[in-house]
Image (cartoon, rainbow, N blue to C red; front, side, top):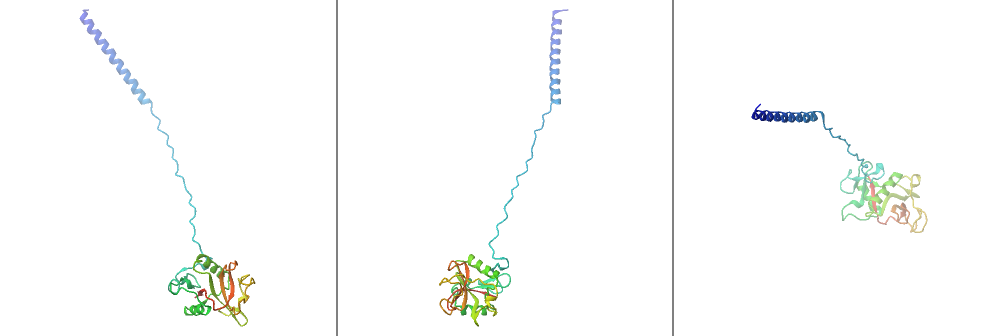
Length: 218
């Protein structure tokens, strides 16, 4: 064989060997790609934290059936409701009518409004007045009731004897004696005083010419 022909055959053989090695390497890479799969990343679903809110705070209220806002069968800010009976609160009137009254003046105003001074003949009404003193302490220190000394004893507007039902007479007073004590004489009307003698919201007999706020039952 001629040297030139031999060199040609050698070159072709080397080229064929190189191509074969390249194809073999490509097949190996392809096989690794087809058999090796990346595991999908694990995902963890976390539930959103639940927050338990505290119950909303309720506004302060008077004892159940005695809660009173503004508005009622009458007109103006002095009227208090809802529910029956309605009440007229003298200190809620706008100036210049916002003043103190004798028992007779308060009684006349209540009658003109179609009602009467409050008769505190139940524990619930006493609780209502205590609530009023607590909620509106800047406005009121004392209140007239319908209680008045008649025919030998204190009576409510309907003529019922005060002693026949619920009472909340104070255990003390200006003479440090239980009420009623008629300390100054002619103390014929019942007023509710707000802790004047460290006795809480309690009843005192007073002269009817004294001046207080008042509550009407309508």
